[in-house]
Structures are given as C-alpha cells and as structure tokens.
Image (cartoon, rainbow, N blue to C red):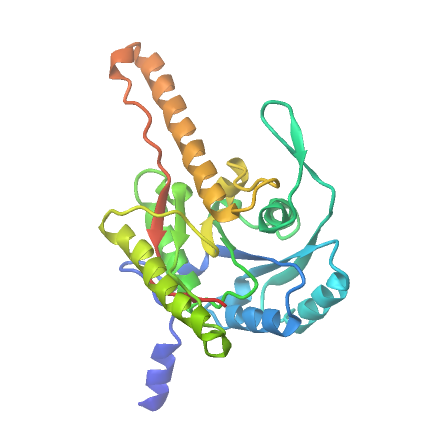
Length: 298
C-alpha cells in the first residue's frame, strides 16, 4: 500500500480529459538572466528546477554577461553539474556596447540589466531550439526567471496542462497568454534585517492579492518570473535593450502588439465583407493567467 501511495504521488497533475503523455509534449525553455550572482545560489535554483515534474525534457538557459569576470568559467561549471538534469543546458553571453534600434530609425545604447540580457538570450535560445534541438516552436513555453527564483515543483506541469486545454479550444488564446505566479520573498527571509522582513511580508500580501485578483476579473502586469508562448515573445519582440523594468515593459509591448493585431484583423475582415459599419474595433487578446503555485525568491 505504501508503494502504491508513492507511485500515485509521482504521477504528474493533469486537467480533466488530458492524458499525462499529452501534457508532457509541451516543451519548457527556462532562461535565467544574471550578472555576478553567487554560484552556489544559482546551483540551488537549477536544482529546484530539476526537481520539477518532466524536468528531463526542459531546456535551461543561463543568460550570462560577457563583461562578468569569470562568468564563462562559472557557467561551464554549472553546465557540467546539471548536464544530466535537463534535456539541454547552455549559456548565452550578452556582449557590451549593443545598440537598440527604434521604429523611427534612431538608436540608443543598451542599458546594462535584465532587459538587454533577455533581448539577447531569448533570440539565441530561440535559434538554438529551432535549428539545433529541432523543437516544435508552436508548443514551446518560455519562462523568464531571476537567478534566485525557486519554482513550485508542479508549476511547469500545471502550465503545460493549461496550454494544451487552451490549444484544443477554439481560437488561439494559448498564443496570447502570459502566466504569473505569486512571488514571495522568503528565500533568505530569516537572515534578513527586521525591516526587510516586515517589507517582505507586506510585499507578499500585495503580490498574492494582485495575482489572485486575476481569478475574479482583475488586472495585473507580469513581474520578475513569468511565462509566455515562445513564438509570441519573438514576434512581439517583448524585450528592448534600453529599458530597466523589463517585466512591465514586456507586458505592455505584448498588449499593444495584440491590440495592433486585433485592429488589423478587424479592418481586413471589414474589407472582405465591404461593410465598415461592421468594424468590431480593437480587442486586445493578451491575457495574464494566474498560477497559484508560489515562486520563492530573495
């Protein structure tokens, strides 16, 4: 009986009428942009991902900075340590001095930080997954995470199950969805100063409330650690190199991209029927869905 209970606990969660095999066909790519982060802490983060259901099929990407002294050696050690934990683990190296081109033809120098790192890392990861690993990019979910984020072990299987249900439903909502879990700053809670612990507690209530409000029709932008359809991330070019708040910026770019797509489609449909009075207007399709499986960070 005890052996049977252990086997049941090891089964992946699935939504009704969805087989475990179907859920596992969704591919996860997880990118960790980082700069001068503690190697032991990053190892713990990767170990947490390795404990997730289906992690043997994950692609883990270390978004390193070329300007970090000893960064390549650190990345190589982590790759070697976790090479058997995932389908593939590799590193990208964001060079300094890159330029961000704008739609008006101008350009500006990139700002060192998470946004510029992601802009480089996501592009490299997409090319590698499509050209070398031969993944079906229509079924790839991209997860962006800070180097200190510890995900719930069922986060990714829950994501995969929701993605498959939405993909089987009419429409393309699976392509226009971002996922957000409550992020709780408890990874180093007890070694933090008392004022930091008080703020961490307040922040937890605020973040949990924002994400849970999505269940009842509320609105919130993604922050810190979130997931999105890989193809949508590439087409909408969610990350720019000359911004600081990469998470809110990515959401806003995705929202306006979906608004433009909706308006263009409405105009095209009206032209086909020859009746502009039937123009249904702009209806942005982007939605943020809650994942009530918290992420722990510092």
